[in-house]
Length: 375
Image 1: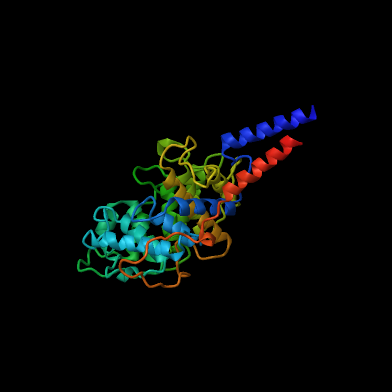
Image 2: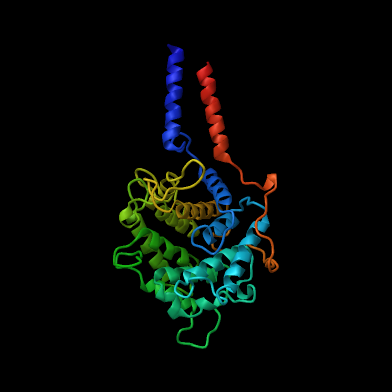
């Protein structure tokens, strides 16, 4: 009878791991979840390039997270050379950047995280497309928020342009964001109802100015946005993305914003709900292998959800470790850009290969099940 009971228990445990991906039965700490998602990205994104997926967000998470990457620094040099190829093949501008300035901002963030000089990268000043404020704000709140973040990564000066009326300044960027605050606090891409992910993006951009006496109105807008975010939070700590329901990306943006502001999403009373907090809500989307689902049903762009979750977990780890914030790259030493036609990512040496923590988890689990079964 005792043996039958143990075998039945083993079978139930095995089925639980099979149908939950091992997440519910073996909850991970934020640090373990961060290591797993970074290892997944390092193995899945073998040749990062100029792209919203498999590109700059992956580079940002890996570089700011200090992750092991295939081939060591040659992995990052491969990305930089692909940026050069994109510039040269498109007349010195990045693909799609004529209409979407966030493409430029993303590249500035990623290259700044690698210590590159974006004011003279392969002979191009990548900040120049962001110097025309009319172009930047034409993309809406995303364009403005990401441009401000890009300039602030290493305190880059805004390039001067001939059209002084269209000249971008930090004051214009900040004022534009402040002017988009909704009546009840928070921000939206369109409409008058606050959206969690957009509000969090605006907070990430405004964070460096919250306590700056030169911008005295920022603090109140930030506080209002935090109140709005708390109101948007669900009972389980999660956040909805439009009509798609609760989404990993929305939770990720909130976790990143709070960490960048120096607020612990796991303990702050404003975000402690009956069923969880933004951090626990984010972690429940992680799958065996380290990647993240977009929504609970597993549909949508899983890679995008994974990269945004990775950035959030890195931001949280940097906050808890007392390091500079995710987008504050003053701690990154300047590095010379690779020579033209330089190396792409090579074959990693065994000690540079990303760890496989989930692989080890599964071995240990099944060894445990086998031991119980044999007893």
